[in-house]
Length: 368
Image 1 (cartoon, rainbow, N blue to C red):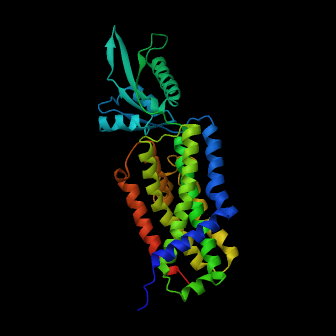
Image 2 (cartoon, rainbow, N blue to C red; image 1 turned 135 degrees about the horizontal axis):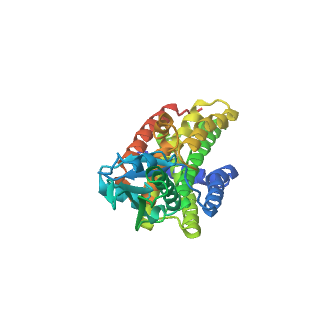
Image 3 (cartoon, rainbow, N blue to C red; image 1 turned 180 degrees about the horizontal axis):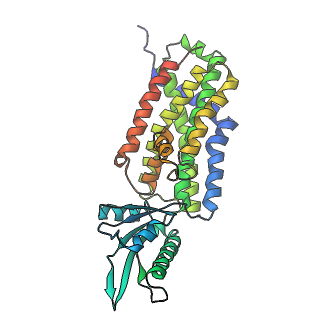
């Protein structure tokens, strides 16, 4: 009786061969590791700059009929909106999702003069934005003072209260983006070129006559990429953590959850590479097609700068891209301390994309 062939063992052999080929490939090492390390080093060493738009929430029951509201609403750098849940606003403030909470008191009259008091609630998580916010509010108060009571004691005043929160550094934004960049480039380009070359050199045709299944080949390639990405992941995260104080709220647990989330991204980006290799007939066409699919995601998915300032229609499109789901999920796990099951939107988006790409990858697979 013939011995049953082990598909898993075949997948491990494929993974070993693919990993050795990847480590020996200068292109894979440069795009997946060297470039992200350079970007993390450059952006981590830079002094944080102030964002163009600053998210400010108005607490419930704030007075919107007075002159201070009109003056604050006219400040162009403020993204001003009403908040309905005080607890949620405080949580967002502590996590750096918003830059401040304002409470506009109703006008009062003291010694015959109207008073327009404004309370600003800030956090150390957005300490870098507080001087800008205070300066803008003081300017708004001065305009109200000059309009209401010119040459008189100031009736409008700003009172600042700070609450404790995590310090949000630029590296906390940049490093998850570079992990996404590494995974995208390694997954798409390496998989596309490798599978095409295996087909072009008739290696896959030879494997076709063996008992090795199509699923075992894809599994072996995925295991190879996973091992390679774990190496890159550890190096990039360690650089950010030890050199630039990258935030890992729960330490090793946070790192492991980020690594687990990367498996979803790996399936998607490798699948894109498999689809490209199955569609392209000429090796010289792989790079242009891959760049067409990867460059827009690099620019639109918040790897280097936030997408909040994009027009609404473009921001909506960006939020549906797989790289956006992946990078947003990494940032929520790393800085906000959420567990992987507490990011259902990002997880659901990655699962849907993963299923779609996996089906297309298997259907586009060709032996020759």
